[in-house]
Image 1 (cartoon, rainbow, N blue to C red):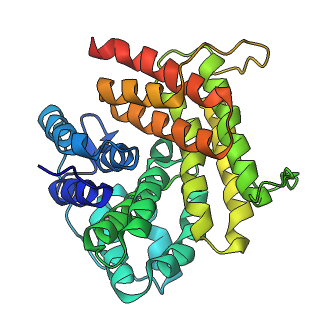
Image 2 (cartoon, rainbow, N blue to C red; image 1 turned 90 degrees about the horizontal axis):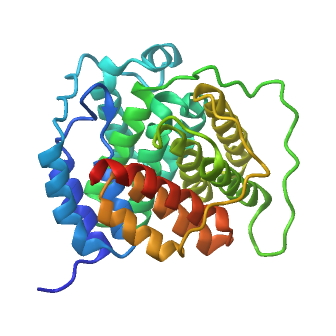
Length: 320
């Protein structure tokens, strides 16, 4: 049997996962579409069907609340009133399905990104993370993108329905000093890459009660970084500022104190780290290791692999 391509694996996974609820257990997020896309992106397309099988056997996903009434995208009072209301998640998803059917996906993204961005921290940034994986899938799909667009609608819909500022504030802060460089990356993109490396180092060295929550201080800004090239230039700096504020706020949420002088733990190269993450099979190890590999290819830094290795060791203990 021929090896699956990235597109084959993503389409099959999204087809099987389309009717699966947004959450499971005690309001835990459905990571399956994100992790399946990350596996396929990393060259593990043949592993995706089996991973999806295992995930569906091991998770009891909640049925999403049914549609209640139409959200009017032209009425700011109407759609703003529905932000953060999870009982409206089906209404939000339907809105984005209509929007994506009527306009190019980049246009829909540019219209809604600044509306959703202030609520990036909701459910530990999973709305923006799911949106980012969907954006990468749509961008790679070409014209055969029906399932990928449906997943983008689900990502945006979940983000809107779990929208929450979570105490994150950006207003009043000084404008950041963006890094310079001559490698072709624009300053905002470089700043996001630096932010991912910074919080990878923090994650790898900080004392943690549990290895999962603080992962999102890395994967959240990495998701923004994945989407920023598809956004209008005027939306890029605000995206960085919110991503930075959210990651910083997570340190307070999880009582994590950075240790700048702490040595990084030893880690193999990112390919080996990802292979171990895929072997563990946990959604968080897969997604963080994919971020590490992606960012290592952009701007090598030992903090990337160190963070993913720490997650593999910490989360891997639950799978022994």
